[in-house]
Image 1 (cartoon, one colour):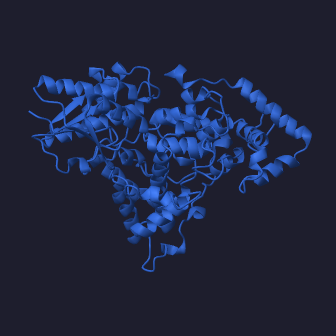
Image 2: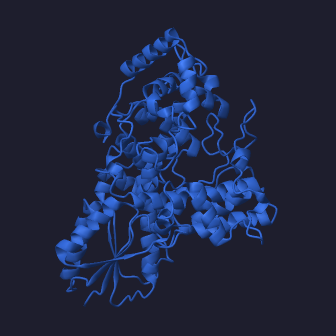
Image 3: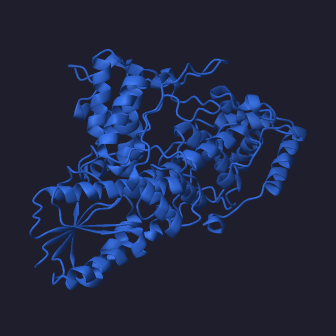
Length: 524
């Protein structure tokens, strides 16, 4: 039997409405899915993330088989190291069944340039044509971002977001103006909780592991021992049905207050009013169009205020689409970016949460337990400390890619290396996202339970964030003084007397010498 097209379905391409299925002929075509060991081992992936991806893949494969799709599925027990090995194994299995080598390998564009290189190399070596299909789970059309970029010397997400709002007509009035008269309501979405904390929060929907997910957990323990994190409380959607339930739950119970408190943090409250939909979006269990339309309808029906709906839509329509465009635009450069010339190891606390800095203890603990942190915890706690610590940016990237369940290269790389670590020198953001401990105190109650004082920059009780913030300003003052958004902080540093400056620098050096670091390699 001759194989016309071999369709490779990757772990973040679990959609039944892809172009993959247009013209699929079960008599001539077949599908390959593979659980690749190196995607959790050489490219480190936590237990939470690995279980989520593999469970979602197995559930999707079950659905494909039920619909009559001819499928080759390689699981962990078959010890497949790489995508190249998976393709080799599939080819061998085909020949054993008297099939011939496929004429064409079809694959939706991978979300990781590294994986794309592997696939291309295998096709070249085996003289198999490769046909890349566009990823229809994004709003941007093929070539649209490149065309938009060509018209700008210094692109910024806000203008890309406005372009998509106008062309797709979301949250726009009949006169072509944004609903409410403003393009974004960012200033209205920086609320903090009172001393009493958040009101009683709505419970999350339950996605208790079924027998298939439990089998994945057992396989991960057997074939990928020693991965970081835990899966005792695994509760992520692994099917489209579950993802739709999660979407409905968010729109109904948390979207109305999402805008007000999207930047807030609170002790032992990892979820607050956030959607928790990014993993389902990135696995392609949900389409961004249906998510945006559900949020817009909630506003039209009077079930959620405009500031909440606009803020949520901006994360998907604006930031998600922009970040993907930026990733592919600079696809060959990310590995080499290190604008700040940072070379320190990632501190041990990122793997253990063993620290008396309460903001980091809280933020890292929930990553280890749930594989999750919301955008402020990622940017202004774990990311900020790594930046101020002068961590080698590629080590920070590897930790983020490994530990967050929603991490796929296209979204994680520019967010980490660009926005969080400023390794790109300003491609993603116009300034380094730096702050002292005062920001964390303003947005959370973490400092209330911490031995360090966010207003102090030197001395034994000084907040390490505040000390290292001023150390960063002093070290990089020559170029920061020309940045319109941080130049004032250079002047504030210069106003400090020499004795205070020296005390801060001494405290910073003490921190660097007394907080041990660990390379990712030593953990993996």
